[in-house]
Structure formats: C-alpha cells, structure tokens
Image (cartoon, rainbow, N blue to C red; front, side):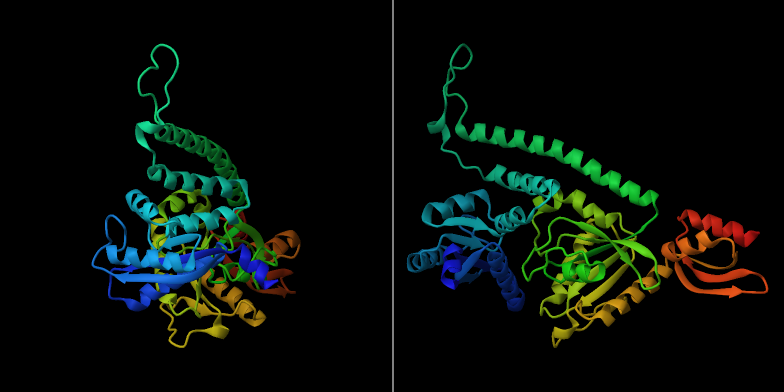
Length: 420
C-alpha cells in the first residue's frame, strides 16, 4: 500500500541560495519548502544549496552549482526541480534549457497548493487570477517562427506571433475573472453589511500556515472543517457562531494562513478574502509555540496585518500547542495566552481572556431593569458581557452589571432605562 502511494508522488530536488549569514533561518526556509512540496504531493529526493553575495541573474545559482544540479538530475531522475525563491522569466528559460526536469519556483509551488485547496467559486477564481498574473510575464515564445498569416486585405505580413496571441488570450481571461470576482465580492460585502446591521460581534482567526487555526476553530465552534498537519489546509474562509463563556454570541471566522514571502499576486488576488480580517471587531493571532521558528512566523503575520491596515483592531496572541512548546519559547507580547486546542479548560480560559480584552472596547453599564422586561434581559445575555444579574425584591427590578458595545441598538435602550 505504501509503495502505491509513493508511486503517485512527484520526485523533487530542492534548490536554495543563501544570501545572508543567518544559517538557521535559511535552514527553516528550506524545511518549509520541503513541507510545501509534501503538501503538493511531492517527495524530496535531494537538496542543493549555495551561499552567494547575490542571486546569479541568469541561472539563480552559479555555473558550478548548475553543473552539480545536472549531476544530481542524472543520479535521481526527478520529475521536478523547485527553487526556493521567485525566479525571473529569463532564469526559468535558462534553467529549463539545461535541465530535463520541469523547473518551478516557490511562488508556483504555493499557487499549485492553493489551486488544489480552493473549494468555493471565489477561491477558485482568486487562484486562477493569481496564476495568470504570474504566468503572463513568463510566457516564452519562439518569435516569428510561430507567426500566423491572416487571409484577406490588411492581414498580410508576419502576422501575430503565437506568443502575442497567448498574451492577449491571458489578458482577456484576467479581465473576465476580474468581472466574475466583482460579482462574488459584492455578495461577500452584502453578507458583511448584513452582519454589521445585526450588530453581531466578529472575531477573525489569523496566523501563520499550520499554526493550528482550523483545529482551534473546530474546537470552539464544532464546525468540523478540514484540519491537517499540512501547509494551507484551509483556503476558503469559514464563519460560524461562537458563544463566549458569559453567553455573548459572536461570529468566528477562520482565514487562510500566512507564509514568509507570500507571493504578491496571491495577496492581491485574495484581497476580498483577507478583508474578512479588516471587518473584524477583534483578531485572534494564533502562533505555533512548538515551532522553533515561531518568532519569524509571528513577525510575518504582523507585517501582513500592517499591510491590511488593521492596526486599530484589538489583537490577542494565542500561543497554541502548549503541550509541545519549544524549549526556547518566550512570549513576545503581554496581550497573550498559551493554550492547547485539545484542552477543554484551555478553551474556556481563552474565551474568558477574549471577554476580558473585549471589555476595553465596550461601555460599562450598571442599572436596574424592571421585572416585566424579560425579553430585554434574555437578549442582554446574548449581545453583551453580563457580569451579574440580581433580583431586588423590594424594587421588583433586576440589578444588572456588564459591558456592551456602544454601537449596539440595545445600548440606547439601556441609556433610556438608566435615565428614567
């Protein structure tokens, strides 16, 4: 059975070029490339690395290393050679002319994983748009050898080359996808507007890929979405109801994982999906505290959140995988909590910590509500953080203490009761 599975895997050689003295970070980057390859159903046969002051403009690695790569290719007969950076069109062309195996770069590998993971129409369109934008400058034609002569007046001459035709076709396809995405994006915006009108508190889960976001999401909401020890297990955002320990009902959204050197074409294509984060009232930043490179992962997410301009949204850092925490792990922020997604007590502590942080953004209330206002009391428990409710028999009123968002319609109602 194992033999059959291995037969299906593509055989891969990894190639990386180290430009800085940080050996540890470079090794993590190569390990991540191996993980990406595994996720894309590839089997790593060998790694080839080189230290250089700068990338070779023609072949990415130096001439001697290219010869070494050719020897490795003869020895292992790979299907694919994957480079740990984004290659220029000329680098791909030069390397492909010397190597028998297909040549792809880190960006193309990530795009391939995204293509396999996309489930919704929006996800598939976004991936296709990113792939076409990546492909457009990398089309290689054979000049006028592929020219096609037209028929009739005004079409004589060398005609349109196959390369020009392909580029025109891709541009047309890009325009068509953008039109379709506009429609899908408008639907997503309408959902967001409806949620805003209903004044439901929204929490977005963000983090580095494979940090355990989907596992945490599933345990908190019992959503049952796909979770696996693979990079980019989640691609399409999923939103479910999550009830905090105090009874407040919120909407929790699981988002696509971030990664170092995330292709700019992907960030642009997934803009509407990432806007789920920009529309949130609160962000849970999940970090894999068991990963030795957790600090770089954390910084990568911070950088992408800055690009999304969400600095004003409160963030709670959740250091996940507490049970397998790295021996050198040290929290980098005070607004944080260490949990294991599989520990029920940790999940309750997390809910309580979210409540605590939410209070900073809410208005405190302490008032007496008439006993006849049963509907208001019941609603208050689901739309606010109620700290205590006591019935005052002498007044026939409930003494309520808690916190509520100023934007919520019930806030005005509470103000009126307080003033009366």
